[in-house]
Image (tube, rainbow, N blue to C red; front, side):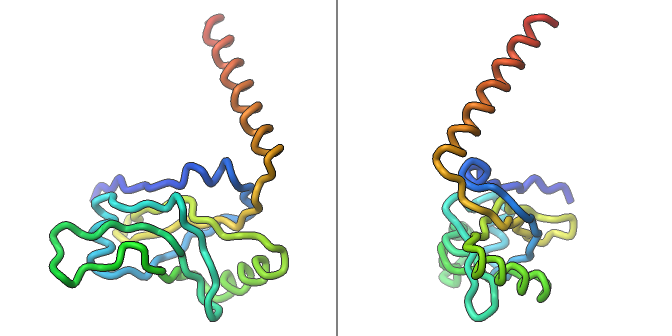
Length: 151
């Protein structure tokens, strides 16, 4: 089965500095997975939060499935993330003690046809860090242009 579902959070790399990355499963309803397989999901404004020692993704928008009946899902509901207990304990400790945040980076379908969410333990960038990122990106572009002229 050839799948090309790879929904990214493009702003995450600009706004956050990643410390650790994890791949988590998602607990979904039947119409949610069908909508994700059509590519109708958005994780740009989403974040992860702990509730009773369980990790949930908040604000992940999955559009309603077009061929569903009145049993369709809620597009902005909280969705439980599935990780191992030791990973959950480590993440919860880091979030509560250090003030770090958990950000979804990528939503994809794996080889077995299951929806997975790549999440990262992240620290928010300050304004001067963002300016530094822009400056580095522009200098890299300039160097690439100069190298292209001399080839």
